[in-house]
Length: 397
Image (cartoon, rainbow, N blue to C red; front, side, top):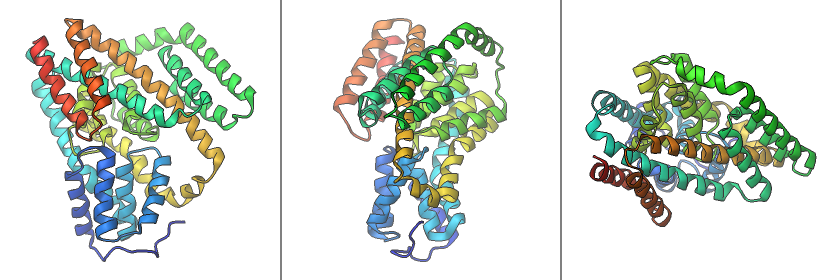
């Protein structure tokens, strides 16, 4: 159960609560580490809403759950102050600035930037820099997740399986079950056989279907499909927002509703805004289905973050100490690393296909990758996006 007696926030009205978390949202630059540190400083160290030990316990639970940790933290802190209505208002306040800014960016992109040949070089530079940032994220997540040979093997299977078109749900379910039964070698070999069989079936029957579905896609997606795309990303965001990229990209760019280049531009913009990085889904939804599409995919993406904190937190806290549950999540997370790596390769190939000259794009990517490895600051991704755009403008325009 959630403990509420150790410390309580001062009495705060609902409008004041919403305004407090709206302010957090306006200042939410620098990614989840900076966002969580800001919330901790204000609500734990200065105002004493909860004790430091309880805050640490809360973070441990949120790290198990999918979804943006900082947003889930805001929802829970709102619950501490004013119950579930307070949690709802806190979550909405925190996400609102980023949502509004991304909607404006998506509108401006669609109206003035997309299809503008004079900006093609700049956009390619931005996309090359974003690819470097994604590669760094794969390495960073993998360092924390792939802690033994079995998990490395699951990641490799995820990479291969994704490249040959095995459905993601087959990979994730099989990985979780196999790693949960780690001492049973038959489970691991069963996973290998399942992935091999699924790959064979996909190659024999799935390729033509996939091409047909992309070629027959309309210019505008359905609202329901975009909501499901966001929901899938929200439910499968393990280890950081970058893990949502394969699923949102597959359900938007993968269906021909926007280009891979535009998708990468959305990821770049998300890194510049005061918002959880998963706000890139709003950009993709806008380009695919207009304002209604943007709101639908955003609702799907953030629904799990609200639901887990508002409804299931007390039950999920008990699962944190369950070793079998941990092994299932570890197996899933390892497979996700492989899926992201495969998506990086696919997006990289798409970017090179669009490049009028390969050497400048490759050079921007390599330099951005080197900087991202050496300069580990919260502002590094945003600086790389800006520098990549400037380099692309100079080298490719």
